[in-house]
Image (cartoon, rainbow, N blue to C red; front, top):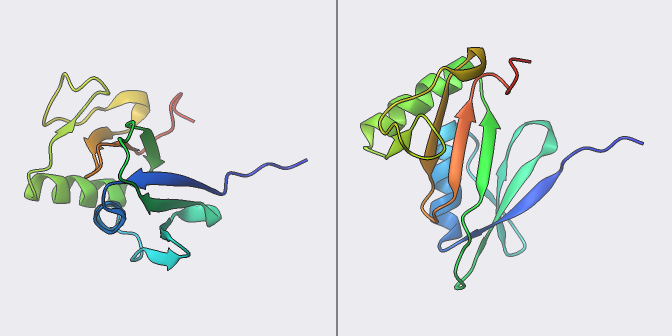
Amino acid sequence: MSVQFNHTIVAAKDKVRSARFLAELLGLPEPRPAWHFLVVELAHGVSLDYIDTTEDIASQHYAFLVSDDVFDALIAKIRARGIPHWADPRGQHPGEINTDHGGRGVYFQDPSGHYMEAITKPYGGG
């Protein structure tokens, strides 16, 4: 049997702001509405389906494998906009990127406090 990841729901204080923030930084298409969600389309039919909530949000971690060109554009946007970012998940290296696993990586938070990670090589160098 084949199993493929399809989508996940992302809680947001403002789904429009959070969905557009991520889509714009990663150079993805404008988020599209679907029922009460705002959908950010990724590769291979995978999506992040943003939903508004008034409840407290437990920060989640979302990691994206990106091309070098997308990473370059992402870092340029992050720096130009003064978005806090780190080379590590604990935030001990602010304003830096990492070169772990033979690629580059960066961590940053979205407007709802979720921790986003962009890497150019999968862990293990695969």
